[in-house]
Length: 132
Image (cartoon, rainbow, N blue to C red; front, top):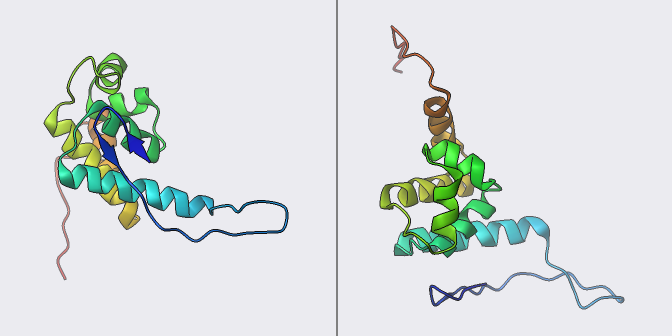
């Protein structure tokens, strides 16, 4: 996998299933995990280019409009980042990195928090917290 404009290339060794009639195939779930792992490494390395944002968004299976809604941005802003017309906002990049880490860990914490904010719900009057 390569991000040509960023000058970054990612490679991995993954198991391939072979049969008599093909050269082999990689399990779809394995490819999904590979893409998430690449995105996590991009986030950890601070590669906050439009190419990285696009790869992360696609690995999260989000449309540009959905990511824009979660980040309280316009779809045009996401498009400008992804096409290199503008540099991605650092805070948004870190947030997308948190979405990636959540996906790797099997959580939706960051996405759930962003969804609550994007819905514009009223604040609760009382927070109920139970310890132990």
